Length: 295
Image (cartoon, rainbow, N blue to C red; front, side, top):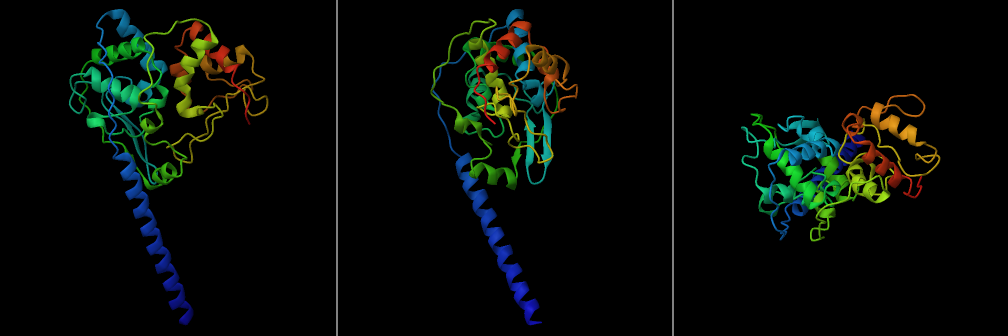
């Protein structure tokens, strides 16, 4: 009996410590997420011409917007599981449950800064992928969003579960990507589209959300443990793609096939990336060949 009483006290103490620890995690993470960030940047005009809308659709596809917000931009739930939480892309159309009439200031803040209305931080929005987007491309992307027909679809808001909050506090998961963005960095007016490493660097910004800023890959922040890790796409000859040929790279992006003939993981958005032009893929390949190999 004495042993059982002692064991019961141990369990009680552990339970109390766990509750207190989780209470601290929620308090601290909520404090960080409650920050308000003010950005003073001139509003971009949303173009209405067909060329801009077509370019915006291309960007929405290749940059992953339609992967998260749905092919019709009516919103979708990507992950909903305990203890991760809910990763959801909101409805970006004028329909019920959507954002209403597109506001160029609010859209630009969300896309390039990871900031919502009233300056609050958006969770799960990978603003680091879009922070360097040129003014022209941002405007075209907004043109495409504004051109979409209304979709009546209410998507529950994203939620951060206990696991992602702990990882956030430990610096292992961004959660609020706006905290990693230089909110006052200048933006270029436009970029030159060419099969160059410089343009490839610009395009590769859209890969950092999964493959990390150094392109070493690893577990994608915010996804359940069962999700496959993103590949190392540095020039490391063993862990990376240092031994790949240009044809190997094209085969992965265009057909979802690895050099060994196996299918790439279903989480890899190659079906969206395969819509990239040859110029874009050549540029991306040229840049990746300059990325230092890291294991």
